[in-house]
Length: 399
Image 1 (cartoon, rainbow, N blue to C red):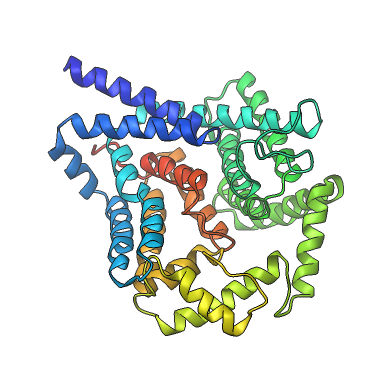
Image 2 (cartoon, rainbow, N blue to C red):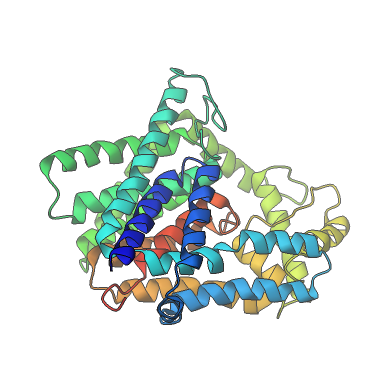
């Protein structure tokens, strides 16, 4: 009994460390992941672990999603690129099921607090760079201060962190006055930080998360929810637009690119539309099982050389849905969507308020941002997705 207790403590310390290191360092997070996996593999009790995993439909969906990528190697020509994609997807079979068996309900607040502490450190560094108190470092610039990761990953993660803080403000009935004041300040400072950094996908999902939060606050009072949404969302948007030069510029550029887009547009919107058109041609020829896990770059190049030779080639279409459809066809897309289906289903039936509400936000967020990039391939966003999925959709009463 003492060995089991000590092992559980080790797991929890490592998990809390992993939640903390997630937004700060790739190396540190990967080191903790390796330690967790090694301990899990040598700790025995395999039958119990196995039954925990197969008893949860989300875990099964995650494993199937990975296995379909492995099967996709059978009809791919570029095996090396295929193995690269499979390597990026290993979280869905090699980490999520492992974490699922070791997370404990008593430590949920500790996981979230560790994550928010790291976001606070990231935010402080971001402001220090923005105010030119310290020199820009790593990925940060004064005009786009995201030091530890690119703005593509930072803003969606920041949006999720903002929701976690707002959840504490609006739904934690046991919150102390000090924590309430601290979280109010934290939510405001993070919201400002959202608009001095340049991740448009994160900014879009920020507004969607605010809308969902308002619906959750008013519960079934649809008229009040609607009124609050049409007041709060435009109010926040126009305040950000008037006060943040970077946000205003990003919005103006996006509008201009949409209005002036054509087959030869060399900008973010033009490239994405071209990626979409060419990828759809590729999908039409390989609807059921796709071109294989590793063949998107080569097959896209062939179509691009015919349809748009002056525009750049792509290793992915900056859209997770299109990438999976291209590589693995309708079967692959259904497999990926089943993960989100079970997340939503499991969150709806949970009796725990935190799990029910936060568990709904995570899939909504990813279902939105995956239209703009392959967010289940990136280290930071995929790791966040896996870490929070490991406890948000676990029935702790049964396990």
